[in-house]
Length: 84
Image 1: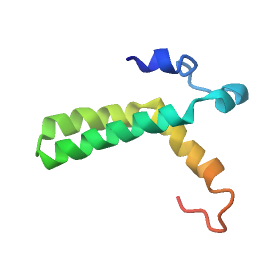
Image 2: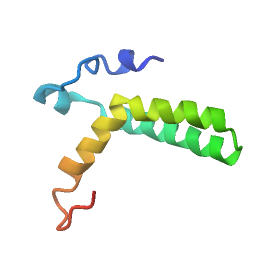
Image 3: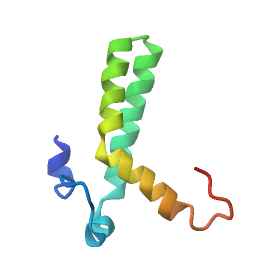
């Protein structure tokens, strides 16, 4: 399934406030976790070409970037010390 089908609002560089609130963060986390697990499996199998492909996808994934921004901005609000 294409990410554009699941997240139709993510084809622009900026995310509006309403779009930010309406994102399905569970699906975004599952997508990032699946990609992360695929990278870990490729590392265990010493498949370096697959690792390079998956890291390229990871680095260009807008969902991963949005999750990182969310973690820094929202999830760290309650903690005393912000860890980046």
